Image (cartoon, rainbow, N blue to C red; front, side, top):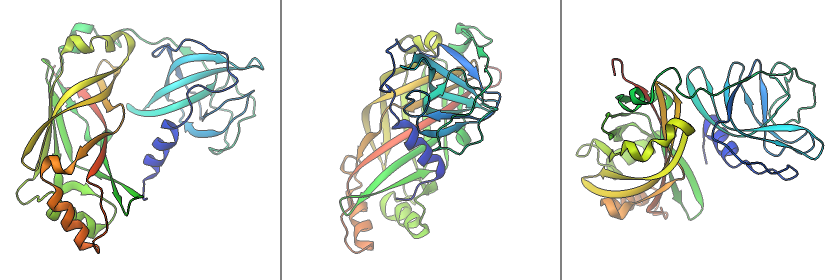
Length: 315
């Protein structure tokens, strides 16, 4: 399976344990506070008595969302993070930071245990309004930021060979009344193999007839109001997928995160399955299979997205 470093990092941090053994239990809170890294800090998967496996690095100047703090049996405090912001971009990073550590100390590569002493990092209280009002937040129009968004899907062939693919051209908006539209340029599909890109465009998606797929939804602002106070909300939302000339209603679990007064993300809480037969794509899959020696290709396709929206100017 070919995957970019970003995808590999995401897979690593998402699968990291969130309830580390050896830690006293505590009640998790949604962004209890934000913590600013004055230097590079290592993110650990299972912090036990001051050590563990570093799975990623928190860049200097990042603001990490701390959702809970725990103390291990040796008296060391650890902060669990859910995501961090760096240069106005949100990154998923489920893991643990040593609570009394600051980023300036460690230059070790990810995967090495951090043992060096680190200076204290100040904790910054999470804002409740991020510089604006709740009313203004929900009255905004939102435009999708394609450079900070991703829409990926998996294909499985020969029963157990899975590969990650993506669409490079997506656009979208959310209006103040909750009407949301995301448009996918099917010709922008990228699989990592040029000839396979061409086959998917013309044999599977038939872009000469169906250039785009669209996802539409109507989000009830009242149903997501809790995202203002909690900064994050996981819920199920109804979506309509229009693909290959067929429309189908889907219920998708999503996580909505308020990243500031002018920035939100909407991400799939877990991959959802698109069945090729539901969108008259089984013939295209058969042609793809025939083109590569009649190998088996699964018609059940897991899809994942992480979309960032910015408040439109003047909204």
